[in-house]
Length: 137
Image (cartoon, rainbow, N blue to C red; front, side, top):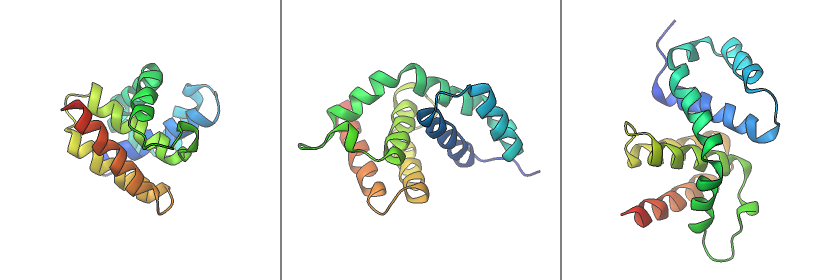
């Protein structure tokens, strides 16, 4: 079995955080399902688990950062579920993981938005994360 890349692990974390957002099912069950479907995730289980736990633990703070960086006239509720999940992961990585440079978090977030969102999601995600980086500087 080939070794899973960090991008693939991030993709797996995205699916888990997205599911967590949809239903309050037991994360153990959701993780078991992930490992059955994608056994290569075993390599990056620590990273995947830290993203899931981190997004859950810091959720309200992360959502406040998203809300603060929305353009005038936008509300948090208006953000697509895909964009919201992608943004949560990227902001968690930028704020809480030392080994993920902000530019990498942004690029990876845009790729996830392209893969799972509609045609507007990548641009929206990129713009909002650019605002977050600018605000942090």
